[in-house]
Image (cartoon, rainbow, N blue to C red; front, side, top):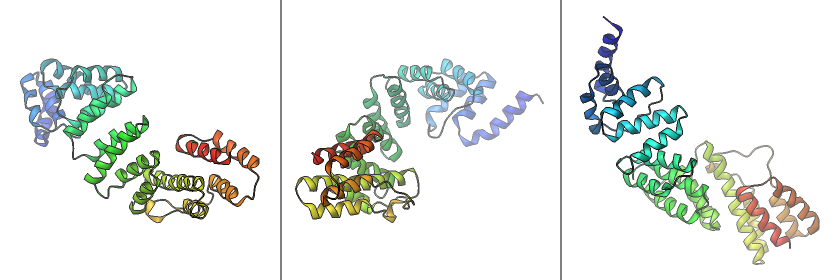
Length: 299
Protein backbone atom coordinates (compact mmCIF):
# COMPACT_ATOMS: atom_id res chain seq x y z
CA UNK A 1 0.00 0.00 0.00
CA UNK A 2 1.36 3.41 -0.96
CA UNK A 3 2.17 5.98 1.73
CA UNK A 4 -0.65 8.27 0.59
CA UNK A 5 -3.20 5.45 0.82
CA UNK A 6 -1.97 4.46 4.26
CA UNK A 7 -2.28 8.07 5.42
CA UNK A 8 -5.77 8.42 3.98
CA UNK A 9 -6.87 5.19 5.62
CA UNK A 10 -5.63 6.46 8.98
CA UNK A 11 -7.27 9.87 8.52
CA UNK A 12 -10.59 8.30 7.60
CA UNK A 13 -10.48 6.26 10.80
CA UNK A 14 -9.71 9.43 12.78
CA UNK A 15 -12.45 11.40 11.03
CA UNK A 16 -14.94 10.14 13.60
CA UNK A 17 -13.46 12.78 15.91
CA UNK A 18 -15.06 15.47 13.70
CA UNK A 19 -11.90 17.57 13.71
CA UNK A 20 -11.90 20.09 10.82
CA UNK A 21 -8.17 19.61 10.25
CA UNK A 22 -8.65 15.89 9.66
CA UNK A 23 -11.47 16.70 7.27
CA UNK A 24 -9.14 19.15 5.53
CA UNK A 25 -6.35 16.61 5.00
CA UNK A 26 -8.69 13.96 3.66
CA UNK A 27 -10.14 16.39 1.13
CA UNK A 28 -6.72 17.82 0.22
CA UNK A 29 -5.06 14.45 -0.34
CA UNK A 30 -8.03 13.23 -2.39
CA UNK A 31 -8.20 16.50 -4.32
CA UNK A 32 -11.88 16.67 -3.47
CA UNK A 33 -13.13 20.21 -2.60
CA UNK A 34 -16.66 18.92 -1.96
CA UNK A 35 -15.32 17.25 1.18
CA UNK A 36 -14.79 20.68 2.69
CA UNK A 37 -18.49 21.55 2.78
CA UNK A 38 -19.50 20.04 6.16
CA UNK A 39 -17.24 22.48 8.01
CA UNK A 40 -20.15 24.76 8.90
CA UNK A 41 -21.63 22.04 11.11
CA UNK A 42 -18.42 21.61 13.13
CA UNK A 43 -17.23 23.75 16.02
CA UNK A 44 -14.23 25.99 15.52
CA UNK A 45 -13.39 25.77 19.21
CA UNK A 46 -9.93 24.38 20.01
CA UNK A 47 -8.81 24.33 16.39
CA UNK A 48 -5.36 25.90 16.28
CA UNK A 49 -3.45 25.06 13.09
CA UNK A 50 0.25 25.68 13.64
CA UNK A 51 2.22 23.25 11.49
CA UNK A 52 4.05 24.60 8.48
CA UNK A 53 2.88 21.58 6.47
CA UNK A 54 -0.80 22.50 6.90
CA UNK A 55 -0.44 25.93 5.27
CA UNK A 56 -0.52 24.55 1.73
CA UNK A 57 -3.61 22.49 2.50
CA UNK A 58 -5.39 25.45 4.08
CA UNK A 59 -4.49 27.72 1.17
CA UNK A 60 -6.01 25.13 -1.14
CA UNK A 61 -9.14 24.94 1.03
CA UNK A 62 -9.64 28.70 1.19
CA UNK A 63 -9.29 28.92 -2.61
CA UNK A 64 -11.74 26.09 -3.25
CA UNK A 65 -14.38 26.84 -0.64
CA UNK A 66 -16.01 30.11 0.40
CA UNK A 67 -16.84 29.18 3.98
CA UNK A 68 -15.13 31.60 6.37
CA UNK A 69 -13.71 28.91 8.64
CA UNK A 70 -11.01 27.83 6.19
CA UNK A 71 -9.77 31.39 5.76
CA UNK A 72 -9.79 31.81 9.53
CA UNK A 73 -7.77 28.62 10.06
CA UNK A 74 -5.29 29.74 7.42
CA UNK A 75 -4.93 33.08 9.21
CA UNK A 76 -4.26 31.26 12.49
CA UNK A 77 -1.65 29.11 10.80
CA UNK A 78 0.06 32.18 9.29
CA UNK A 79 0.00 33.78 12.74
CA UNK A 80 1.58 30.69 14.31
CA UNK A 81 4.46 31.05 11.85
CA UNK A 82 4.97 34.76 12.54
CA UNK A 83 3.24 35.82 9.35
CA UNK A 84 1.08 38.24 11.29
CA UNK A 85 0.50 40.79 8.52
CA UNK A 86 -0.84 38.12 6.16
CA UNK A 87 -2.98 36.72 8.95
CA UNK A 88 -4.50 40.12 9.68
CA UNK A 89 -5.23 40.75 6.01
CA UNK A 90 -7.17 37.50 5.77
CA UNK A 91 -9.13 38.32 8.92
CA UNK A 92 -9.90 41.82 7.71
CA UNK A 93 -11.13 40.39 4.41
CA UNK A 94 -13.70 38.35 6.35
CA UNK A 95 -15.20 41.61 7.68
CA UNK A 96 -18.09 40.69 10.04
CA UNK A 97 -19.05 37.38 8.44
CA UNK A 98 -17.85 35.00 11.22
CA UNK A 99 -20.15 34.32 14.16
CA UNK A 100 -17.31 33.03 16.34
CA UNK A 101 -16.13 34.98 19.41
CA UNK A 102 -12.46 33.88 19.34
CA UNK A 103 -12.16 35.12 15.75
CA UNK A 104 -12.93 38.68 16.85
CA UNK A 105 -10.65 38.39 19.89
CA UNK A 106 -7.80 37.28 17.64
CA UNK A 107 -8.42 40.02 15.09
CA UNK A 108 -8.67 42.65 17.85
CA UNK A 109 -5.24 41.59 19.10
CA UNK A 110 -3.65 41.86 15.66
CA UNK A 111 -5.43 45.11 14.88
CA UNK A 112 -4.11 46.55 18.11
CA UNK A 113 -0.59 45.31 17.35
CA UNK A 114 -0.55 46.99 13.95
CA UNK A 115 -2.53 50.11 14.81
CA UNK A 116 -5.67 49.21 12.85
CA UNK A 117 -9.12 50.62 13.60
CA UNK A 118 -12.06 48.53 14.75
CA UNK A 119 -10.53 47.04 17.90
CA UNK A 120 -13.35 47.92 20.29
CA UNK A 121 -15.97 46.80 17.78
CA UNK A 122 -14.22 43.43 17.51
CA UNK A 123 -14.06 43.07 21.28
CA UNK A 124 -17.79 43.81 21.50
CA UNK A 125 -18.49 41.16 18.86
CA UNK A 126 -16.27 38.62 20.62
CA UNK A 127 -18.48 38.93 23.71
CA UNK A 128 -21.68 39.01 21.66
CA UNK A 129 -20.89 35.64 20.05
CA UNK A 130 -19.36 34.02 23.14
CA UNK A 131 -21.17 35.44 26.16
CA UNK A 132 -20.54 32.36 28.31
CA UNK A 133 -16.75 32.51 27.96
CA UNK A 134 -15.03 34.31 30.83
CA UNK A 135 -11.62 34.31 29.04
CA UNK A 136 -13.24 36.18 26.13
CA UNK A 137 -14.56 38.83 28.50
CA UNK A 138 -11.30 39.00 30.43
CA UNK A 139 -9.43 39.56 27.16
CA UNK A 140 -11.59 42.61 26.45
CA UNK A 141 -11.12 43.90 29.99
CA UNK A 142 -7.33 43.67 29.75
CA UNK A 143 -7.36 45.68 26.53
CA UNK A 144 -9.32 48.53 28.12
CA UNK A 145 -7.10 48.46 31.20
CA UNK A 146 -3.95 48.56 29.09
CA UNK A 147 -5.40 51.58 27.29
CA UNK A 148 -6.29 53.25 30.63
CA UNK A 149 -9.97 53.21 29.71
CA UNK A 150 -10.91 52.44 33.29
CA UNK A 151 -14.62 53.30 33.18
CA UNK A 152 -15.14 50.90 30.28
CA UNK A 153 -13.02 48.27 32.05
CA UNK A 154 -15.05 48.67 35.23
CA UNK A 155 -18.33 48.32 33.38
CA UNK A 156 -17.18 45.06 31.78
CA UNK A 157 -15.61 43.60 34.92
CA UNK A 158 -18.67 44.42 37.00
CA UNK A 159 -20.91 42.57 34.54
CA UNK A 160 -18.46 39.67 34.28
CA UNK A 161 -18.16 39.47 38.06
CA UNK A 162 -21.93 39.10 38.33
CA UNK A 163 -22.01 36.52 35.55
CA UNK A 164 -19.06 34.47 36.80
CA UNK A 165 -19.17 34.59 40.61
CA UNK A 166 -16.16 33.25 42.54
CA UNK A 167 -13.90 33.40 39.49
CA UNK A 168 -10.76 34.93 40.98
CA UNK A 169 -9.39 35.93 37.56
CA UNK A 170 -12.41 38.16 37.04
CA UNK A 171 -12.47 39.38 40.65
CA UNK A 172 -8.85 40.53 40.55
CA UNK A 173 -9.42 42.46 37.32
CA UNK A 174 -12.59 43.93 38.87
CA UNK A 175 -10.54 45.09 41.86
CA UNK A 176 -7.93 46.57 39.53
CA UNK A 177 -10.58 48.62 37.73
CA UNK A 178 -11.96 49.89 41.04
CA UNK A 179 -8.49 50.81 42.28
CA UNK A 180 -7.62 52.86 39.20
CA UNK A 181 -10.85 54.81 39.57
CA UNK A 182 -10.00 55.65 43.17
CA UNK A 183 -12.72 53.40 44.60
CA UNK A 184 -10.45 52.10 47.36
CA UNK A 185 -13.04 50.76 49.80
CA UNK A 186 -14.87 48.87 47.06
CA UNK A 187 -11.57 47.45 45.79
CA UNK A 188 -10.63 46.29 49.30
CA UNK A 189 -14.07 44.74 49.83
CA UNK A 190 -13.67 42.68 46.65
CA UNK A 191 -10.16 41.50 47.54
CA UNK A 192 -11.18 40.54 51.08
CA UNK A 193 -13.55 37.87 49.76
CA UNK A 194 -11.55 36.80 46.70
CA UNK A 195 -9.89 33.40 47.04
CA UNK A 196 -6.92 33.40 44.68
CA UNK A 197 -5.17 30.17 43.78
CA UNK A 198 -1.35 30.32 43.53
CA UNK A 199 -0.82 31.78 40.06
CA UNK A 200 0.27 34.91 38.22
CA UNK A 201 -2.87 36.55 39.58
CA UNK A 202 -1.73 35.94 43.18
CA UNK A 203 1.14 38.41 42.96
CA UNK A 204 -1.07 41.04 41.34
CA UNK A 205 -3.93 40.55 43.81
CA UNK A 206 -1.66 41.21 46.81
CA UNK A 207 -0.15 44.24 45.07
CA UNK A 208 -3.61 45.66 44.44
CA UNK A 209 -4.50 45.06 48.09
CA UNK A 210 -1.43 47.00 49.25
CA UNK A 211 -1.97 49.86 46.82
CA UNK A 212 -5.65 50.19 47.72
CA UNK A 213 -4.83 50.63 51.40
CA UNK A 214 -2.01 53.08 50.63
CA UNK A 215 -4.34 55.07 48.38
CA UNK A 216 -6.97 55.08 51.10
CA UNK A 217 -4.43 56.23 53.70
CA UNK A 218 -3.41 59.16 51.49
CA UNK A 219 -7.03 60.27 51.22
CA UNK A 220 -7.45 59.98 54.99
CA UNK A 221 -4.33 62.07 55.63
CA UNK A 222 -5.70 64.78 53.34
CA UNK A 223 -8.89 64.74 55.42
CA UNK A 224 -6.84 64.97 58.66
CA UNK A 225 -8.14 61.56 59.79
CA UNK A 226 -4.76 60.52 61.13
CA UNK A 227 -5.74 57.53 63.28
CA UNK A 228 -7.71 55.99 60.44
CA UNK A 229 -4.80 56.68 58.09
CA UNK A 230 -2.42 54.87 60.46
CA UNK A 231 -4.74 51.85 60.52
CA UNK A 232 -4.91 51.85 56.73
CA UNK A 233 -1.12 51.96 56.44
CA UNK A 234 -0.89 49.06 58.89
CA UNK A 235 -3.36 47.06 56.81
CA UNK A 236 -1.33 47.71 53.65
CA UNK A 237 1.53 45.73 55.20
CA UNK A 238 -0.60 42.59 55.60
CA UNK A 239 -0.41 39.46 53.43
CA UNK A 240 -3.89 37.86 53.58
CA UNK A 241 -3.94 34.09 53.06
CA UNK A 242 -6.87 34.31 50.64
CA UNK A 243 -4.81 36.23 48.06
CA UNK A 244 -2.73 33.18 47.19
CA UNK A 245 0.82 34.37 47.93
CA UNK A 246 2.92 34.21 51.08
CA UNK A 247 4.90 37.03 52.60
CA UNK A 248 8.50 37.07 51.30
CA UNK A 249 11.49 37.39 53.61
CA UNK A 250 12.26 40.88 52.30
CA UNK A 251 9.38 43.25 51.56
CA UNK A 252 9.40 46.71 50.00
CA UNK A 253 7.41 48.91 52.37
CA UNK A 254 9.17 52.19 51.72
CA UNK A 255 5.97 54.02 50.80
CA UNK A 256 4.36 52.95 54.06
CA UNK A 257 7.48 53.93 55.99
CA UNK A 258 7.43 57.41 54.45
CA UNK A 259 3.75 57.88 55.30
CA UNK A 260 4.27 56.71 58.88
CA UNK A 261 7.30 58.99 59.27
CA UNK A 262 5.32 61.93 57.90
CA UNK A 263 2.42 61.33 60.28
CA UNK A 264 4.67 60.77 63.30
CA UNK A 265 6.97 63.64 62.31
CA UNK A 266 10.05 61.49 62.95
CA UNK A 267 11.91 62.49 59.76
CA UNK A 268 12.09 65.93 58.19
CA UNK A 269 10.08 66.52 55.03
CA UNK A 270 13.13 67.28 52.88
CA UNK A 271 14.61 63.85 53.65
CA UNK A 272 11.27 62.18 52.99
CA UNK A 273 11.04 63.92 49.61
CA UNK A 274 14.52 62.71 48.67
CA UNK A 275 13.60 59.14 49.59
CA UNK A 276 10.34 59.40 47.68
CA UNK A 277 12.11 60.76 44.60
CA UNK A 278 14.38 57.69 44.56
CA UNK A 279 11.32 55.43 44.71
CA UNK A 280 9.59 57.44 41.98
CA UNK A 281 12.56 57.05 39.63
CA UNK A 282 12.17 53.26 39.81
CA UNK A 283 8.38 53.20 39.68
CA UNK A 284 5.74 52.91 36.99
CA UNK A 285 2.04 52.22 36.72
CA UNK A 286 -0.06 52.71 39.82
CA UNK A 287 2.96 52.77 42.11
CA UNK A 288 4.11 55.91 40.31
CA UNK A 289 0.65 57.45 40.80
CA UNK A 290 0.93 56.76 44.53
CA UNK A 291 4.40 58.32 44.79
CA UNK A 292 3.09 61.48 43.13
CA UNK A 293 0.13 61.59 45.50
CA UNK A 294 2.40 61.22 48.51
CA UNK A 295 4.67 63.98 47.18
CA UNK A 296 1.64 66.27 47.08
CA UNK A 297 0.81 65.78 50.75
CA UNK A 298 4.46 66.30 51.71
CA UNK A 299 4.09 69.78 50.24
